[in-house]
Image 1 (cartoon, helix red, strand yellow):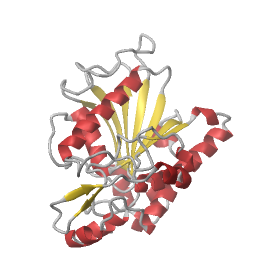
Image 2 (spheres, rainbow, N blue to C red):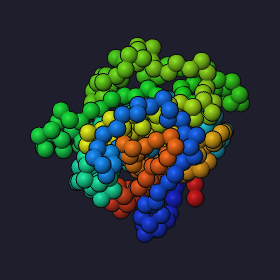
Image 3 (cartoon, rainbow, N blue to C red):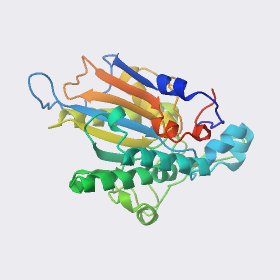
Length: 312
């Protein structure tokens, strides 16, 4: 959904601008009332859930969109694969996790759970990451503690659809079927029942932006409920999409937002991190924003041609 023009910008600026450490307070209208009210932790406060949102690598649709709107409409795929650069970005992400670098960004608690959007581009992006996470947990003697799953509520705004040349008429498609997903992405064998041989997308057409925002609020409520149940600090990583990351952040920070996703920018494989305390409540809806759109794994390669995601 977002362009991937080549960027030339200094590593120092990127490193400084991609990391923040600020306290963010959302409006009291955040949609969390459906979440569990159970809390854990001591008198100083409950444990925290660190949420790591990772955008997928560059897709072929990103390339077409960067060329022109006409090229995008003519060549776009309902469920595109990664480009050559996107595959390199995914490998760089996995390699960065393999070297233990995430401690500097994610903190001491290892990733204990990985959720992946069921789109092809997110599954392809997540595969090198999943491989390295499994290696690290096995080396620590705790392979059973890492949970990896396909989550069918964290797909990109719009869903899976075909469009006419004018981009005015849309026809839903199901996406990857269960057998193909299992065969191609065996790391993610935990599939919900709604991933069938006919795919996983259940929309009747292209999802609207506001429908995506409502879905993101339901996922935000799921994250809050998870934070409230924790018995220790945990880190949850999600491999997702540009617009969906915007929608989740807005669900916490500006839940009254409607329409397009214009508040945040995300590089391909950019990393956004925030904490949800177990004491989270609707009346005091605090999350701690740790980093937004960080790309240390790309900068570590020394290859700035791997930077893509949006025009600057």
